[in-house]
Length: 234
Image (tube, rainbow, N blue to C red; front, side, top):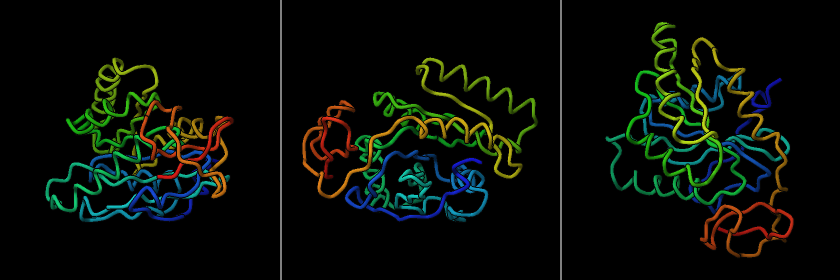
């Protein structure tokens, strides 16, 4: 059984200081209204992520426990123009800081509407995340909205475009409505979490220092408890 079937809401975080201790996690990112919440619910087999009728409403990182101190992190949607600047700026800052500084993050699932893949914001996210060296898996959601032939054509085009981004990025078709692509997605993402991971930080292990593992020199980065390394505060 997929480990995502055990997913249960754990907590929400508005700042990095509030994220949970973790042995490993996968983050889901995507433009508002791309079908991200529906994809998470499909993987879980039940409704755990709220599907809003007003795109861009989520402003927190929502953590869902998967067991063994592993998590799925649902990141705020990006690119929704009608959200006021005063609200959008803080959550974009939170999104960027998490992706850059969260050491227990094992990889990023990027959700794109198959009818509108690789928008400018999607490309910027992929280009920005690439230096981390962590894997990316793209879910082309709402595949049921296209004919099989049309969906396959989009898939081949996206495969061609991401080939230049390196070997650690992959893509698949996905439909939460038809429950298609679930096994493939669970297999790819589950492999990231099944790999050996450092133990989560404990309060007694915290000792601010530079995060040398990710190449990030920000002393406020988060790092797992690895041999020869201390946990970090944010």
